[in-house]
Image 1 (cartoon, helix red, strand yellow):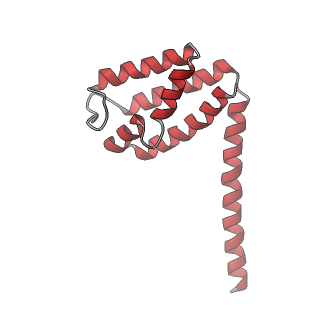
Image 2: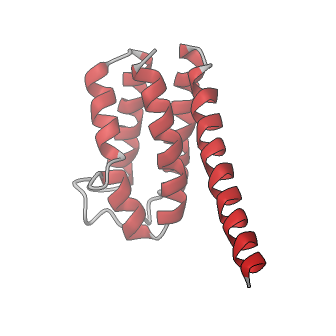
Image 3: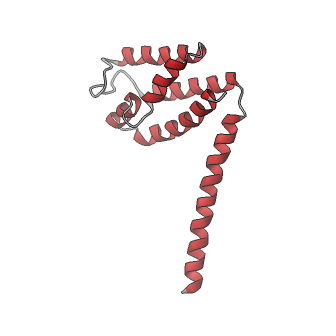
Length: 132
């Protein structure tokens, strides 16, 4: 009985170490990027969001009237990244918050798990971007 508990504790500890190292590796990866690389990664994240949204998506819980309005907003965020517009970046950060429009759209349209993965990438990149 004692060995079983020991093995279980070691396995759980091993899992926590792996998860922590994975998080640190991802954060250190983004810290080593130059500004152009960070911007390109942010573009990829916006493209990932856009990939999950289409003209048939439900925008009823947001202030987007349709897909075209959503697409225009993504284009504005990309322009803000290119222009290094800090206000636009703050707005983009808000979109990924728990009450942000990107989160709402993902919840409404059934891609919450995919959004969680995208959101983790965005958070790491956002911190790398503002600390650059």
